[in-house]
Length: 276
Image (cartoon, rainbow, N blue to C red; front, side, top):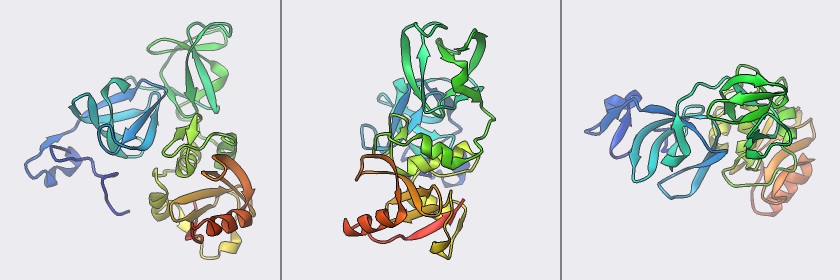
């Protein structure tokens, strides 16, 4: 993969220790691991700048620099570099479980009639401290339904089923959650849930995920189909699942229809297909 600002943990002032040889007078630091304390937070290209992607509750962020209310560092899950608000970060607590359903609630008490504190997306990470009835107590306060979480080491058997779980989710550029998601965010969530490493953006995925398929007529479920700036996952040999701005949602549609529509809209032809 070519290196760019998304994958280089350095700015004009600080450099992560992995790039110490390239410090050139900048401060070299290992940084500090923090955890996301909000349900969803934007990781931005610059302080106050546009959203590149999102991070979820409990995910690890390696903080390299704090500056004027913003933190510079990277998502330890996929290495993506950027800025986020410092008040979105909490001290490091090692998670034990993750949310396994599309979304759940963090309750104020272990009771379905209790007031909810937050809504948490699929793949949010939690440190479970104990159980009370059908609920688990979470580090930092609150309770989640035990049926909605699984051990952190668990892996989904089928990434297609994970992608289908998001059908109907609103499209959101740079989104990574049940509350809004984009094409490459959907693919990343589905593959990583099944234990498959996957970078965040579609161009990165097209360069690195799995292997290229030479014969595009030989597609099967789980294969990835790429256009310039877009990606979808095949549900079967003829049907695509993708988050897209035409429907403003995650949908299933025949690949042939998606290809024709994208070409007609000026998006160009399929650029490649890959098999994770």
